[in-house]
Image (cartoon, rainbow, N blue to C red; front, side):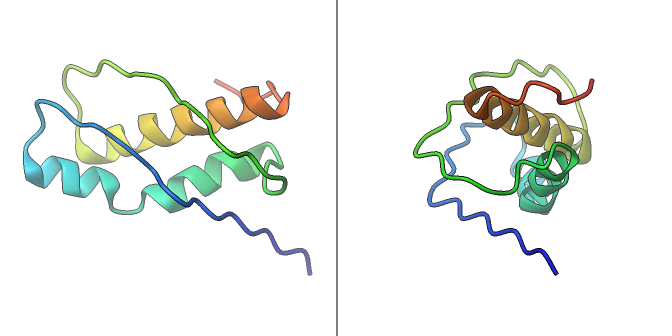
Amino acid sequence: MNQAKINIGQLNIRLRGLSSQTAQGMTSGLGSEILSHLAEQSLLSGRLDQVDAGQLAVTSATASELRRVVARQIALAVAARTGNMGLGS
């Protein structure tokens, strides 16, 4: 059985203009969502010291939509750092 281990030592997300309820809902399950995006590209091994996922401007979205967008942005940044740019749209 193959096992993947991802250790995220620190994740900084700055949220502006969101209610605390939406922000809390967005972060709930974020790790699983990131893992799902990484698993799609077999990016479940290796070590990266730091990844900057950039900024997102989202004008209106539900917590689950925000979670999906943020997780995808993080996975794309990891893919870029590892040279695996095959993450689908």
